[in-house]
Length: 125
Image (cartoon, rainbow, N blue to C red; front, side, top):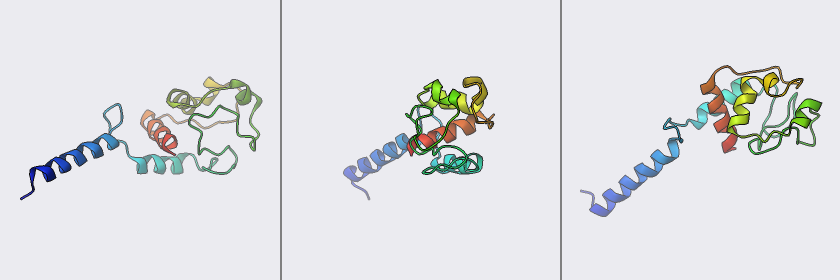
């Protein structure tokens, strides 16, 4: 039979794991799902650590738009000076042309849940 000390330790572990797995909205975060969506939706043009048709995305969260020196951005995106965070990335993935007219990204992601998962994945990198 577990001691009171052991029971408290187990309860604390459950609370800590729950806090890690649940985001501020109360929805469970699934890192594997965000990575899976990133690989499904983004890697055709983006890589995490090198440029492809589009700039690398590791470290994009908190970075200023158009600021990776090794990538040639559209003039519009360089001039936009957007700091990438949850809100700006969500707007960008929803409709890049609306956020920054005349940019070079034609892709958009209609699903708010998929955007949230991908942004959470990029944020954790």
